[in-house]
Figure 1 (cartoon, rainbow, N blue to C red):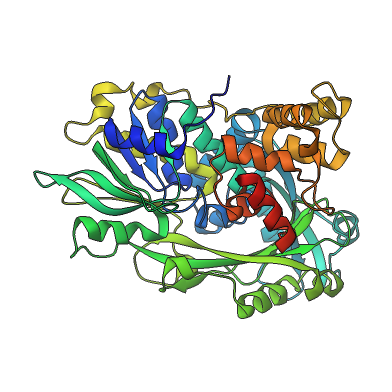
Figure 2: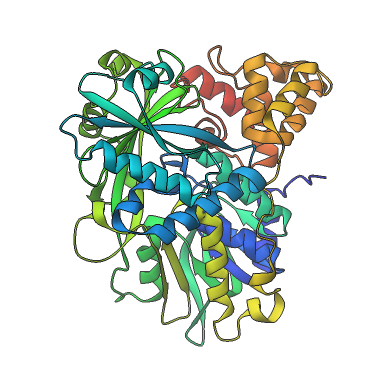
Length: 517
């Protein structure tokens, strides 16, 4: 039974008056994963996020849950196998309502960087490392591939290699992880910025926090503090030690979203050169293109998709996508995020996607990097590291990390098709339109029935937020009351797909703002 979250003032009061075992600073994929696993282990966990949960890099990914086909090129066979195991766990046991299977076509172009034999062997090995759980990687003809990909360019196309992975709505997965952490006992707050660290005897023992929504300042004390602020990780490390050297470097990844001219039943993963692949992914009834991989040295808060990024992404997509599917009048949205990579020589495009863990002189542990596919594994790894620190509450109070159930599902776990069928049958209130029923089932799982319940009590909440979008007003009320949504952007960018669809018009934003009051 879901308990309505505290008001912000009640949450601030709980955070400031309680003694916490662990304070997690940062509500992206790493912070939420650690908070979730630590709360499962029995620790008293607090988490603060300066913006919205998954408001930066964590909701600006390529939306993939994948084994990492390109890692085979570097001989990282064990890494790919581990990624596949985690991918299958997410898709089958943890979040089948949020993580969806997707077939990939890898065009083999005449004069391209890879030949048919190499890519054919690569996708076969890739599927073998997943125990052929999604089928056997193989090579098909261009004509057969064009049936699934109506936008596929067949000029200069020798063949197409086929493999299988998964995709997701990253913002929704992150939000459900926050929900899981809260359900396990963590106390969380977003739009609350750390403005200073507390120290006792030279040890970091908490943080001073400012509520960005009303300016209220409060403190949070904890035995352990984890810095999981993503691109801002070194900014917080300098609060602990002003002279500390940088621990990471940043790479910008931009994406473009377009309306689809026709349904795509497979994604395209096109080699740009020996190391890079550009994607064309069917996602949220649209086409998602990208990504770039360029060093970023500016303010992380100012990253965005520029005109040059958009032009480059469209140009690279044209290697395998027909021009009529790449028309600029089809663009609905463009966005960019920052990958956090280990420091070191060489360009960012060749840097390993590894997690960087450092301990500061005041005992604050900082973690950054990694990837969505293994975010649960990283959470367990960080918790294990925390357990080895001196006087760690993990070792003292929590159950051993190895005893944690590895496949605890995220809230709402259910078969989306069954949920949509039940919504359309009207057993839980007025029947929504078919596209709305499918949308609710894919984004909320069984929690969609809570939204249907809102409509049953107030039928006006069944109205669409925009005529061309499946979202309804009840989702805004649900986001406000049960998903920590406080601003219009919280709703239109991360709890719905309105921005992705290019439908967050002034009228829609005004409507959402009124519902948030």
